[in-house]
Image (cartoon, rainbow, N blue to C red):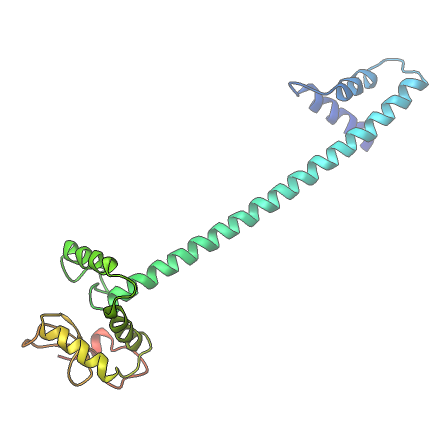
Length: 203
């Protein structure tokens, strides 16, 4: 069986499997199965075959294009999920830097309700409130791993004197602990290269 005959048989089977074949497809089957086609029948059949092949090529092209679009959308969705996950991890990392989340267990270091309440309180502070600028300066020092400014040290020391558990002490160390108790040095003053890891931390 040559390729043309094979194509015709496959196409006829395909058309017969359709619930609503077009008039062109019905005519192709009729002419192809005609026992004694005349010259006019053959001419019509050849024209319909060309049209059907063009339709088949167009359908394949649409399928390829659709698959490419789907793949692009999937890739974009995966990239978006990865970016979102990265940003969520970065946000969680901020809580770790602040000593509010244990970086080993991932659990809050204070009561969850207390932490949520504090965050809700922060969210309620207006964007133009002067406190926000103070917080930004302190955060900027921490994120850039540089020696805190005198203003940042004073600000965090004041917070610690009021009962804060994490902040700068008077020597410029970033520490965790209650005023009057032993404190854990998270980052030493002047350490611009890296955070003090858990096994390097001092009390």
